[in-house]
Amino acid sequence: MNEKPFNPGEQPPRGRFITFEGIDGAGKSSQIAATVELLRARGIEVDQTREPGGTPLGERLRELLLHEPMHLETEAMLMFAARREHLAARIEPALAAGRWVVCDRFSDASFAYQVGGRGLARDKFDALEAWVHPRLQPDLTLLFDLPPETAAARVASTGVDPDRFEREQRDFFERVREAYLERARQAPQRIRVVDADRAPELIRADIERIVRESLPT
Ligand code: TMP
Image (tube, rainbow, N blue to C red; front, top):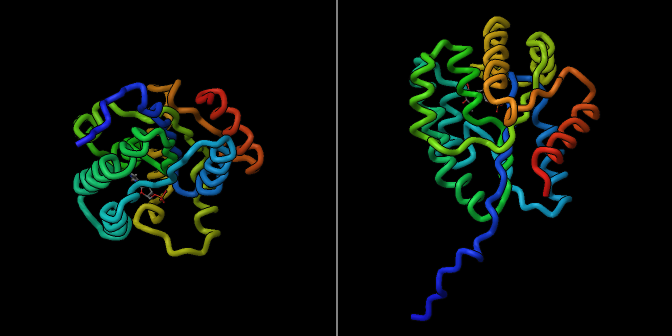
């Protein structure tokens, strides 16, 4: 057997982990696509993914989470179960191989929706987060902030049947928004609040600047 000797110098630098957050209808999707394009144009290898989902099992859990009524703690645990799988099967290997991961939502969404929106006990969220990713946090999180009524109008204008979350009332989304902003105040370096109630080109320019400043290559 002629195995190559272990050479730590050959390991690629770890990739960066960028997440996008915001209430339903915040307009993340097109901006995520633009950001991935921007990074690829800079020669960066990017893995684009989403939560809940991102793996075959995660996508099956997503179907249940979006459509099947359930207890709020079941919902929180399934979100983190899907996340555990996603981290092990996709996110961690990509980062270790030097690829960047751009993910539509991560644990900040569990804080905002399950703790803020549903009223899950904070210590239960903390326990799940400490269990599933004790050391990892995104390198950068872009939080799309806008009034719930504007977001609701955008969701309605798609004409697509709303899922279990999108059917929630405005006060639910007020709480989700407030929880997101609270989380941003706790981690202002990592979570950058983007005013999403503006023209897409302005939002895009903001994101481009934030990504360049926060994660220079
Ligand atoms: P999406 O519509 O942005 O793909 O997200 C699916 C829904 O799941 C969205 O309404 C937010 C919700 N969600 C949570 O409640 N908790 C979580 O941890 C995640 C990742 C998403």
